[in-house]
Length: 442
Image (cartoon, rainbow, N blue to C red; front, side, top):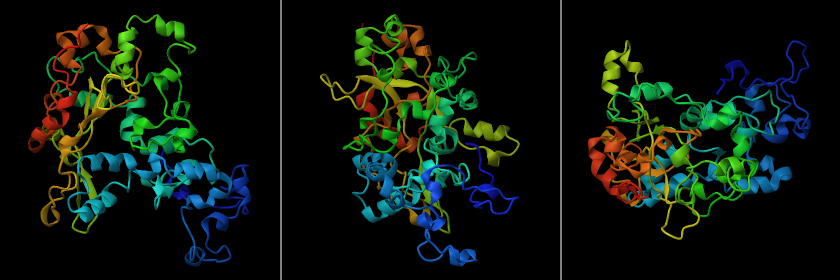
């Protein structure tokens, strides 16, 4: 994200003095409104404190957009951007909220919703995509006070979806992968000196987020009833652009690996994804003054050596793991499931049973009582797409002895040392149903 200079983040001026040009730019109908139409307050006051008194809102709610955009506001209220339902559903699946519900809810609100939500007070925050940088990413107006019909990829989309989506899509995880190499198995394809990560092929082709993720999806149309983000009916599918009936149908059919068996049983990502970021053991806590914070990837096996080699060890933080693992798709319900493929790419989520335990006098154990209820290696759609990848280099990578380099055969061993000792048993129990303990038959 391109940082918004601090002096310009909220500088508002109408251009009535020559040396200060107006930041109320743009030709849309929004520019015909006054400040108080949306923000409230008192525009006759000559002091900040009195101007911002009464009903003033620094970030107007969606109610100000409803008169003209009622349908969009209504659907956006059900979107996963607004509800955070994907997070709460995954936690509830593991029993979160069944033990000391008051503490569990308070810790979720303190730790999660301050970043993982694009709303204000449980309603859509339209301006965080169309007027300003989201508050959780630092805030600041995008272009004066002009309303942007299409959000900025750098200042809106990846301002929030940065550590995974942006770094993967832009091919910016190369340095992380190099640091990871110290922990990789000797035969890991990612340990090879000649392996480098590339930007996603769609980025190289000049596509931006909105080319695949339309406004309908972002505004909550087709929101899932089961709170599974992969059940959003307006979400993009590879088949929307690639395959029979599409513009490149003949080129698609000419690829030898595009057999009916492969296409019917495997997500496209199994063949077309490069390594992607996997995280482990997010542990939240509070400071002595009650400020919420978190620590993640505490089991990073490369951390000690990197700190020892650093000029200033205090600047060295734990790393995530760049890897690739395919396995049985946790969303697949068995033969006859036409909505999900049997095999998919898997990404480890940053969870264990102590996410919300805290420490010291604040310690409350058991808030996530059943980690084994759902896999911690989850169905994934990483933004690391290439036409040709390491797994496609040889049939033995799926159908022979080399399959162990690419498929999830051991939920602990395939984490390359990132899983901490207290959580080994729960990792084994949670992921037993999605492992490939033998190559795929021909």
